[in-house]
Length: 217
Image (cartoon, rainbow, N blue to C red; front, top):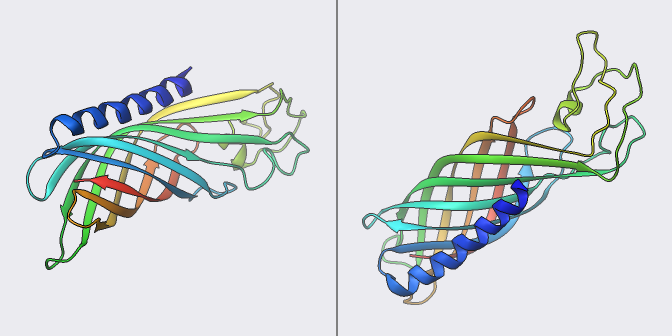
C-alpha cells in the first residue's frame, strides 16, 4: 500500500509541476531524470533510479524543491547467502524537501553548477519470491538484518516465514550537480550525485544516486 501511494504521489507531483509551469514559468523549478544508484551497504548491487521534483526559485541563486525518488537495491548475492534460499528484491522510495544553491551561468557560458541538500521520509521495501523459513540453529550474519530477519541473544537467526517487509525512516541527502543550458531557453540538461543516508531499522540505508535529466529554471 505504501509503495503504491508513493508512486501515485510522484506522478501527481509531476502533473502539478507541469501545470504550474504553464501558469508561473518565471518562478517554477522542475526536474525529471534517472540514472544509476551505487549502494554503500554490503551485499547490495548497483541498480537504476528515478527522480521527479518541483519547487520555486527564491532569488537568482536559491531554490527550494520537493522531490520523489526511487532507487533499486538488488542483492548482489542470494537473499540469505550462504543458505540455500529464494531470490529477492528491494526498493527505496522517498519524499523529501531540499535547498539548492545554483549558479546558472559560469562566466557567461551555457554551463552552470549547484549544490543541493535536504531531508525527508525514506521507505525501504524488501520482498522474496515465496515464503521462506530459515533453518533452525542458523548462525546469524549482518546481512540478515538487511532483509528483515532478526537474531536472538545466542547468535541464531529466528525461524520465521517472511514474504515481504517494509521499513520507514527519516534521512538526509547532500550532493552537487552540473548543468548545460539548452540554447536561450529556461531548460537545462543536468547531471548530479547525492550522498543519501536513512536511519532504517537494523541497518541504515546508504547510497549515492547518480542522475541525468532535465531541469526547468
